[in-house]
Image (cartoon, rainbow, N blue to C red; front, side, top):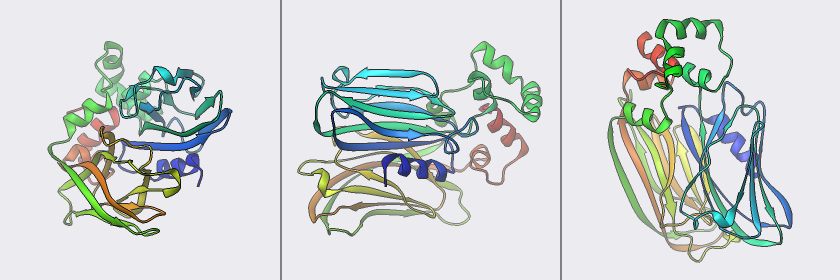
Amino acid sequence: MAIQDELATVIRKARYLPELLPLFHAQDLATGDNPIITLGSPTISPDLPVLTDKLSATPDTSVLLKLKADKPTHKAETISLNAIGELTPLEFLATRSLSLVLNADTVVANYKMYLGIWVIRPSIAQRILWELPLTAEYEQLSRKRGVRESVVKGILPFPASYQIERECMGFKRTYAEIVPAVTSGQATQIVALSLPEPPTEFLVLESITADNAGLTLANNAQIYVTRDDDTNYLKLPVFPMDSGYDFPAFIPALRKLEISYYADANLANRYVRFTIARYKLTDILCARFNLEATQEARESTLCGVVP
């Protein structure tokens, strides 16, 4: 499956918003433009926009990165980027289209990159800031809660990282695992966590990385992430990763979270590291995840106000 088709599928399956999707990609670049991402309607829209977060790419004097979100276009000489594993801010809002192209002056082998992509359901505060349309109901709620005035004052909206920090209460644990043997064509389970019914907590995959030493593109080594009923929700290539850095993610799960290792080759002693958080499922988070919640929590979430 082409990378943009797989990314589009994951975006459509995102359900516990906001979710931070870690996009890893590696390929041999041909001379000229190499399209990596091409997304448009209905995958992304003003009601389900995406926000690029941070970038990591192999510095190369012959490679130019071109990202276009709606109308704005950004070009980055990749030689100016830090080594793979160091993240560079690359924040762009896409409400209609998103494209990413790697332009190479010559053939480049094994080019690697990571891009974080937030999938979000915009609050009223975000809609006002980003000049997205408001329904009559949203306008009425904005007046009731004074949202527009707060946006004008610079109080709202909150950055996603700050809002998550305010809303999520619990503990994080880092798992560092050695997968002793991977059989070609079979997924080897690394960890499987489950929550009791009805849930009072939820799980979040917050970072992931792995050792790429000795791997090739042909190995097709991947980390599979299953969330609730979304089997293999994420398929993350290992070849572009770097075990010296933890790549951020934010993938909530209400029932189970499973991580497995897959490859098209027999592999041994593969190192994988990831962070999983266990947070209290509060009223405000029930509202955010479209579960049963109070009217106050639903209004606060819709407006983008932290109670």
